[in-house]
Structures are given as C-alpha cells and as structure tokens.
Amino acid sequence: MLYVGLDVHSKRSSICILNCDGKIVKQEQVLGRWPEVIERLRGFGEPMSVCYEASCGYGNIHDRLRPLAWQVTVAHPGQLRLIFKSKKKHDRVDALKLAKLLYLDEVPRVHVPGLDVRGWRKLIEYRQKLLARRVACKNQIRAIIRAQGVAAPRGLWGKKGIAWLKQLELPSGEKLALEMTLDELGEYTVKIARVEKELANIASRHPGVALLRTIPGVGIRTAEAFCAYVDDVRRFASPRQVGSYFGLVPCLDSSAGKDRFGHITGDGPPTVRKLLSEASWMGIRYNPTLRAFFQRVMRGDPDRKKIALVATAHYLCRIMAAMLRTGETWRGSDQPKQEQGAKDGGVPPAVKGLPSGRHQTITALSSDGGPSR
Image (cartoon, rainbow, N blue to C red):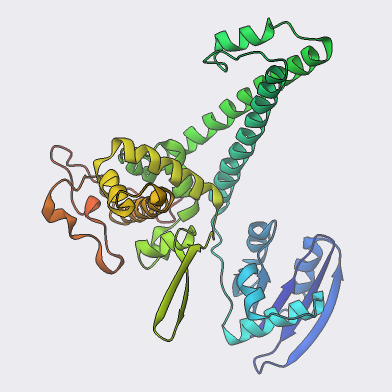
C-alpha cells in the first residue's frame, strides 16, 4: 500500500509517496493541470491511499481519484494549519505533511458530497450572491434620491414604487445613474427568480425539505440550505454535532476545572447560519416553542437578545437535525411533561412525537440525504 500526499494547484502540483513502512518512496512536481496529476498516479500501478487539502474544485478531484485509489481522503485546511504550524511553507513540504498524516491515520477529514448535492449547494450560494448584489443596487438608489433631499414613499420596490422612481425628476447625471441602476435591479430580480425556480424544482424532489417546512417559521430557503449542507444526517453522531458543524456553539477554553466560553466558533457555511438566524426570528414570532426558549435564555434582559437569538438558532438547528434523523414532522412542546428536553444530544422534545391530528411521518429520506432521483 502506498500513501500519497498531494498538494494540488491549478497548473502545478506536488506529490509525495510513502511506502507501508512510512519511508519516502518518491517526491516530484507535476507541471500541468489535474489530468496530468491523475495520469502520473495511474502510472504507479500499486494500491494507494491518497490525501489532499480541500480547496476550489476538491469535489471534482475526488471524483477523478475514486476509480484510481483504494481510499481518497480530503483534509480540512484550517485544522491542518493547527496540526502543522510551521514558518516553512512549500508545496513539497505540504505534500510530505499530508502523506505523513495519511500514514498515521490522523487526517482531519472533510465530507465530500455527491455531484448533485455539490451543484445544489453551488446554486444556493449563487442565489445569496445575487441577493447581495440586488441589495447593493437598492442602497445605491436610496443614496441617489436621498442626496437630492427627496423622501421615498413606502413600498419603493413594488410596481408603483418603481414607476415613481422612473418618473422622478433629477439632474441629468443622477437621472442616468438612477435609470441604469434600475435596469440592473430588474436584471438581478429576473435572475433570482430563475434560480429560485430551479431550487424549488430540486427541493420538491427532496423529502427532507418538506419535512423541515412543517416547523413554523422555517421556509423553503432555510430547509433546502440545511438539507444540502447536512447531506447525510447519519454522519453526525448526535444533533449537537450538527450545531457544531454550522458554527453555532461557543468557543471553549477549559483549564484547571474552569470553563470559559466565548463567541460562537463561526465554523461551517455562513449561509446556513444566516438563514437559521432569520428563521429563528420568524419562529419567535409564530412558534410558541421557540418563543418560550428565546424568552428563557433572554431572562427579560434586552442586552441578552442577540445571545438568545443565537441560542435559539442552535436549538432550531438541533431540532431540524433530529427531525431528519427520525423522519417525524414537527410537534410543539406545549405540555409541561414535554419540557424534559433532549439530554445528552438526544431528540429535542418538539420532535419526540407527532402533534394531535397530524399523524404523519416522512420515511422516504434518501440514503445520501441528497435529492432523490
């Protein structure tokens, strides 16, 4: 068995190969793109285990290496820096470090979803970028009319508001900027609608999205993002690990029996944290269970509102993970005996059973958590 460490780049890559005794067999650089690296590895003709660092296109490389290698391991970049903190940074050295970690079976692994789930995630992130650009256009329009001392009416982004903006009398320079920004705003609106149509098509084939939407306050955007990034919920030992995966748990500094908690870790995809926070605000308004949890954490202190919101988002994340694991629809914990909670990372009380009159259980979750074909 050969243990191969790859430091992959777009036009140049480094390869380090260790034998079964951990000795360096070969170190070399490959000039060219990824197909040249694959062909070079295919030339060894021995069973091999390959490790490389997650970066842009890591899923594509993983699919190319799967037929060739006995095992393909993708390493977490941030955790690798913690393990190998060194002032010496070189492609050859990085490839050697990856090969050694693979030989010792100490690689901090990254989950590699399937091709369809990777495309699903990419579409979700692309929608977020389009939304950010549309918000920038709206802010630019507001700045133009504010600079002229004009008060904007309510419903500025509706049909009547857009018509009012087009008829607004402004100096020639500001008028041209306003018209071009309005055209850009319309283009982004059309693009977002097109992306959301495709996302809705994907979500309609995933039973987990329909399951999570039974939670009051959770819409299709939050449900689809959660399902796409969780992928297979069984890869997590407990719902608490899902909260840690999305970076909703606090930093911990424990020493001499004293625990010091800081801000949240912020690990994982920020898009899901953003959507979970937005869903938590809606849940606080329309979901008695989440509202009670939020008020209990806030303790009547307005200064703890942000802390309570993040805790509610973490609680909602655990509930959603438990629902995907059990396949049960939402039920509110409106009875005192249900307040027992999810101890030791178990299923939260809100999903331990079915609500009265809603005897529905979704059991058709696909094995990989991705869109069912």
